[in-house]
Length: 353
Image 1 (cartoon, rainbow, N blue to C red):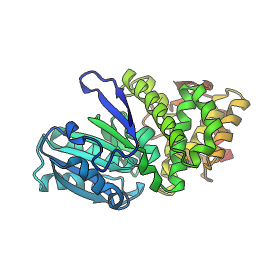
Image 2 (cartoon, one colour; image 1 turned 45 degrees about the horizontal axis):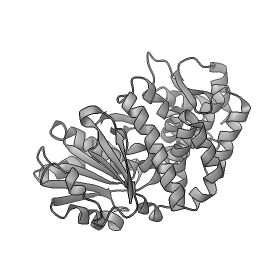
Image 3 (cartoon, one colour; image 1 turned 90 degrees about the vertical axis):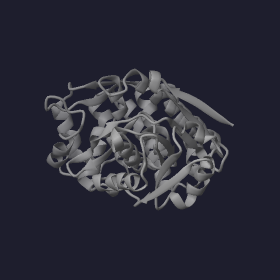
Image 4 (tube, helix red, strand yellow; image 1 turned 120 degrees about the vertical axis):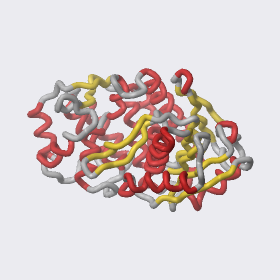
């Protein structure tokens, strides 16, 4: 049994399929593959667990594969180039499909390689981490990091399919499960106050990996992201609210060194900093902080010099005309993108870190 959502983008619309036991030949993945061959991109952690099960869904296709090193520190141009090298070596054509099997790093690298090879070939997302299932696999953002900032090199390239087998979460380390919950919390904070309240009531079930609770959280997160992406595919307006907490979070990642803090951990601390900057009331900040803490996520950033942090934030992709833009809250479930913030409050938040 599975649920199917659709990201509505006209001729480039695609399904998000969510269910248990979809790998291992139980889903007709070949129906979404345009040509006779594909390249499965995974990493050294995920491939031994799920690559064979994925291959069973591709019995009538020629399948090449590549295993990448695991970790955010490998999300660089050289790694993306290795995927393109493999496509060239296997004589991949314009009808080759790239399949990303793994977390957000694998999906971003594979998607960027697919966007770049022959000016764009098809790709499919098979996310195996909670964070990738609820966020990075949906919406077509692909790319790699640069020493100067996170995701500075990339392209918008929508997948043909997002296939979410929730059984892959059974092998996910606890730390990564918690990190994924940061992005789930984000959706409640910025667009759905009722979902936030549901998360407050069900946090213990989510941490215990209750399958029904996780499936509902994943489905609602994907529904909310799909709605925003359909309104603003290339982030010229409303889609930027999905970056709530990320201006702070990306700066934390860069200052700490990519991979020291997981993305979701940095976003968790960043959301609380953004909530404080919003000046939407202490009660709102306290609710967000309590839920983040209940998920076992950091509620404070690491000790980073305020000027260093501010300089890192200056390379955020939301900067326009050299002005920092933040996603701030008017109320729970209501967010906006703005350059109108209190510099003194920002300075105090950064110095308190």
